[in-house]
Amino acid sequence: MASMLKSLKLLADPTRLRILMLLEQEALSVAELQEILGMGQSRISTQLSQMKTEGLVEDERSGKNNIYSCSATPDLLEVARLAAQEVREVEKDSSALRHLLSKRKDASRAYFDELAGRFGRDYVPGRSWKGLAEAMLRVLNYRVVADLGAGEGTLSQLLARRAEKVIAVDLSPKMVEFGRELAVKHGLPNLEYRLGDIEEPPIENASVDLAILSQALHHAEHPQRALEAAFRILKPSGRLIVLDLLQHTFEEARELYADRWLGFAESDLATMLEKAGFSGVETTVADREASAPGFQTLLGVGWRE
Image 1 (cartoon, rainbow, N blue to C red):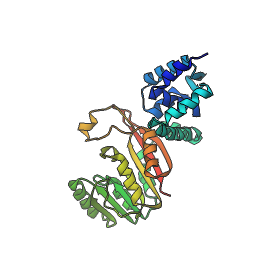
Image 2 (cartoon, rainbow, N blue to C red):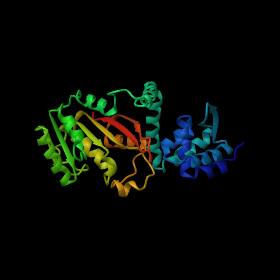
Image 3 (cartoon, one colour):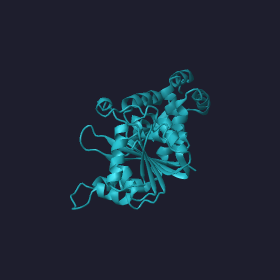
Image 4 (cartoon, helix red, strand yellow):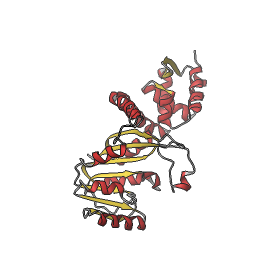
């Protein structure tokens, strides 16, 4: 029989307590725990091994993975739940778990991931992601669109060919000036450039149908504020699209690209979107670069009800 004192000592560690609270809700693999907790594989495996020795968790082989589940006694779990109330990350973990389980149920996701892996592998004349994306943008129908952190406005110009109005916001006066010149040059009177910060965009509340943060969020000093600002400017039933980098370890990006953050974990982006007030939040890794440092593109969407 496992020792209650040893078990309590193990659960005094916040990381082990977080793992147990997750496994109480759902059986998970080490990789899934990594995604939720944002920790390394070796660290999580070490914690699981210690917990398994004391009978707090058990594992079962499933293909190449070990699936871990909670095996703690009801009395111990009752104490663990009380202790977990003092660990602020537990609530965030539960939110990340909900998104992970939602992804599990999405059977079509696996199909499209496989399809995406084949796209572009073999040469087909005239077929490219750029061409496909441009075609999709031209059939979108939104009245007012905000491109937050627009840069020189390549995306804004594409959107302006379909939307009634596009507001492109950027913090750089030179980028805004350059974008305005391009809008005139390409005959896009419905494309308006505004100088401003994505954390406080110069856009009226509830005035936008679609807001986009394309590779801009990792430049924000306070990403949560940027998402809350996007929520503020959206009309009811408006949508936010976030394209950013998946969390990485390429430190040179801070100097090379003036990045404030080294991307975001998928679960962290989902949690931030929910905290900002968005509903129907979905996240996925949309693309992976083959060459070093192997950046991955994270896509997140949400609705303002």
